[in-house]
Length: 332
Ligand SMILES: Nc1ncnc2c1ncn2[C@@H]1O[C@H](COP(=O)(O)OP(=O)(O)OP(=O)(O)O)[C@@H](O)[C@H]1O
Image (cartoon, rainbow, N blue to C red):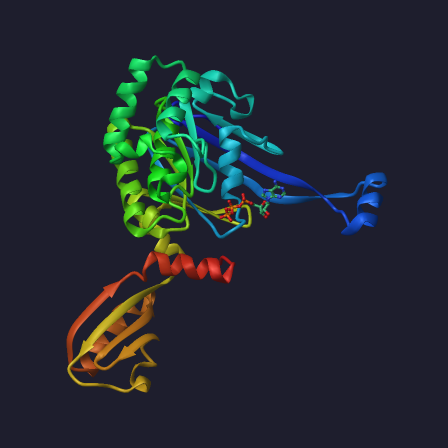
């Protein structure tokens, strides 16, 4: 793969297999395994390639177990690829060089780095010292981020006394103290209520605009993806099946469009069956799923055949499409 100087991250034919022990349960199984160790490989990521430019915000989508976290961990250098290459800003992540670690950060929604019994502020000054920031630099940086994250006296209360949202915002503050230019965020809004999710989202968007940081994010909340990520990379069973803009994802996932019609008079179900798949029929409203190639004919026939007050054509909601994809667990 030829590297363009404008590529910040290059992932080239990356694969990861986890070696897992094949051990029978119980003491007998443990004993047998001790003398005759059997293992098998779990493929988590298979032959994935993509490039990311500086300042991009990219969302990784996929069902549970698709391989998103494994991919992020390889880009951070936490685990080594089985085959293939990762380059982040000219560094090989797995070497974990200090200059590389100063450029990146990893936030995992289900893990925390702040010390439970201490106020976040104490941990923040420890982190600042680790990254070689003076007390003055740390103070300026903490104040700047605290203001953006709307954190105040919470930073002086023990972590265990904070709400989940306050804790997550403090975690993000801690992760950004050293001014990383690449942010790897694994489910950063996990478990937060709708308002707290929205605050984290608007912070990330603002941070990206102000600093030009590159953000790679996984989330099961489609609202995170639609609000933040113009580009999405979809992974299914370890393989990449879509890399492109979010808007075009709907086209590739569904060859149909939604036609919503408001009628003058109530009509029966059977009257609409020939036009498309009925999604909803309620009093004088009907929502049909119509394949794109038949759209013009169907709309013109509907207008001729019925008394119509209003007609609207739209893509099926992206979260519905992706939800269905996750539930079905299959990709065309
Ligand atoms: N340490 C490990 N040892 C063995 N198998 C693992 C390990 N970590 C992950 N796996 C397996 O690798 C596959 C990908 O897991 P991964 O955590 O990357 O998925 P994910 O897309 O992040 O899922 P989720 O959305 O549930 O976090 C899964 O089948 C998982 O069981």
